Amino acid sequence: MTNQIKIAVIGVGRWGVHLLRNFLAHPQVNIVAVVDPHPERLAAIKQQFNLDEDVILTTQWEDLKKVPGLTGVAIATPATTHYALIKDALQQGYHVLAEKPLTLNPGECRELCQLAEQNHLILMVDHTYLFHPAVERGKTLVQTGKLGDLRYGYATRTHLGPVRQDVDALWDLAIHDIAIFNAWLGQIPVKVQATGTVWLQGTGEQGELANSYSPLSPPSQGLADLVWLTLTYPDGFQAYIHLCWLNPDKQRRLGIVGSLGSLIFDEMSLSSPLTLLHGEFEQQGNQFIPVNQRQIVIELETGEPLGRVCSSFVVSILNNIPSEVSSGWVGTKLVEILAALTISLGQGGKPVFLNNHQGSKETSSDS
Image (cartoon, rainbow, N blue to C red; front, side, top):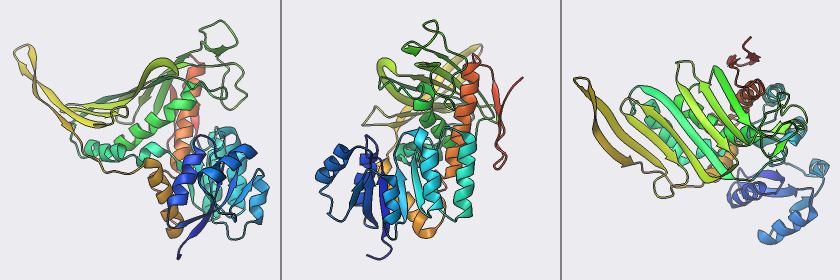
């Protein structure tokens, strides 16, 4: 087939297997290799997807260097392994689609983005929500003024597990909602704050957050189970995010409130994930009377978000044009925000300011 590209999938755990499924179904992709350190996983996916005998199944990343004509790799391994794998892949001349976060270190992210640019390669991050039809449609509604003057945003992401042992709830959960707010607003936060509580995996008094915890060092000082975030954007808009992995009330809900109504993305509502709630106040004397209240369920395009991610990666490779939605630089900015939030978390909610100029993206705490 013309324009068919050769791709290898690195890591076929809980998420990697879905990347493999989508790439196998793509007409312009030829899966030539799968790498995973667990032989039993390789055996399982060979049977599950009835893989051809010529697909290389290996536990060793180095074996990919023997694959002729390999175009790109999709990396779905633990975040701590991303930097070394992505750097090696780019140096070998492969385009890269990486699971989020790009890495756990903003400096490493910037280095990888620059390396991709120098080698004229695509570096894309799998921020799947940015390809969700509800998020795409929501961005249009917000940015065309359907909500009037924007007032504030809020999000809740809770469930009973899974409890991570390598990163806290901040690094596990927050990136999704921050990415959506950034996309809908068309802005990047300039100030962030975070507070949290440790119950399950702490080293000090139960319920106290250890100040020295950072994802950039071994996570041995306590992992926050509950985190509250505040993001402040350049125009003064603020978004508030609630994250918790030990709350059986499973919620995946995000909203933006404006002077004319609210836009709600509720992932748990399969029938109407995106809803526009109109409503405003009319002042009568010293009373404020609700008027113009109505609910509109927004119709959405169909399509699996991860399938859209994979297709976007293929299009970027074939046209040699970085993704406008989820490039390495987009992923880098999100990691910078998480790193700033981590500083604030360790300092009990102290505001941390971000410098949002590309190329000189530094995070500094307010003194």
